[in-house]
Length: 103
Figure 1 (cartoon, rainbow, N blue to C red):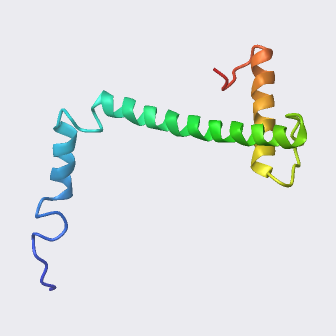
Figure 2 (spheres, rainbow, N blue to C red):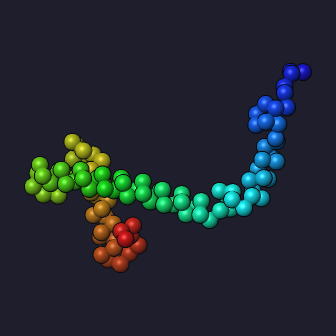
């Protein structure tokens, strides 16, 4: 038998008692609606930041090319090409009354 101290792995508390304490706590991230709201806010901020970064790249493309017509197979920036294609698709969906990610 190996000498294992009861204090190893979390100070002696079993994982089930820690889980039970988290679930019963009124401030647990699993039960706290503000924690869920905060996580959604962070996710939205991250997505907004990525969208703004792509918009900046499109602005740079326009400055260099004189238009925003990024070809689908634009080899110099494939991420931009894919992003523009997705924006066009979402706009088309919204214009025809179908569900779209555009707000």
